[in-house]
Length: 378
Image 1 (cartoon, rainbow, N blue to C red):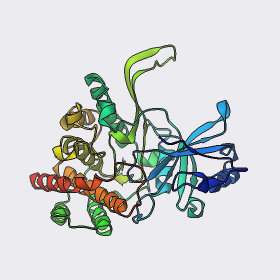
Image 2: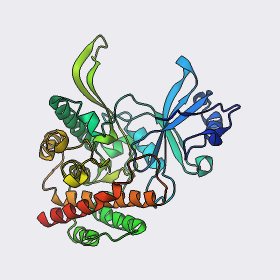
Image 3: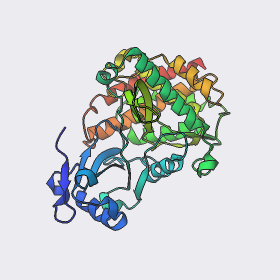
Image 4: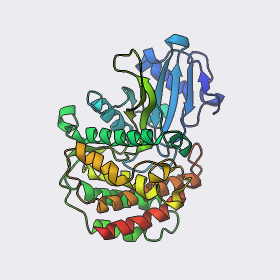
């Protein structure tokens, strides 16, 4: 890890002094001094948080010593930003709305809709302690029981999300549930057309098969995360404080926060389950995905329970008719193939930050292949 960039908002030189790419510390410090002066204590430090493959996430620290404060900043990626994607205002709105619910989210601190400050809208949220389990080296360190508990906690949290009444938290107008699944196919087809830079055998056949067999979506109207998976959670595994704060509970597993809400909307919760199974059973148990950063550490290959056990846990807790999920898995494969292709395209243009992007494009073909099999099984 490189040293974080540092700037004193009163005297520091800003973006030219080694600030992380995509983050002008002078402009950020000046904006905070006007809009949230309590968050602008000098010096301001920042570093890019590795792991995200879409929006950029930075860890910030303001002030010194015990009076310092840690925060997280989210902004869209550099270049080739697709229409309707990477909406910072939607992320900020939903974590604000979910704050009083059973769904753990970071506290929202500030939204800046003005692209003139950093070149794109951004928002700030609190830093939540916990670990993002995204690599095989992390999950291999867990016991079999801890892996199972972590997977079950992931599914319990998803059930809690889908149980939230959107109207009760001010999100009645957050999406258009009617026709959600059909719009998902059309949306990701349009995203594909904007990211296509090479031949992609089978992907147009998958798109047509999905468009020609859209289910009715009897569960529509729930809050859908849109990219729910293990490495979009902050969790603690192992010794954790007991409820009364007087001791430790060995082996405790807790989901501390759900992250990356950029694709959230109102729709059919089965879309979340289908995409989760795509990550878990398709990528997590695929020879083609072994070692790839979008699948490393996930699923049965990494010693976690199989996807059917995850769905059983979810179905036992959620008031949702799960039913057959083949179509939804096929949609998950199509969606993830398009996302991977978009990231691959940005990588070829030199518009990605951090490592792990050079193999993302390799995932498109196996996703399309499995998606075609799944859509034919329904």
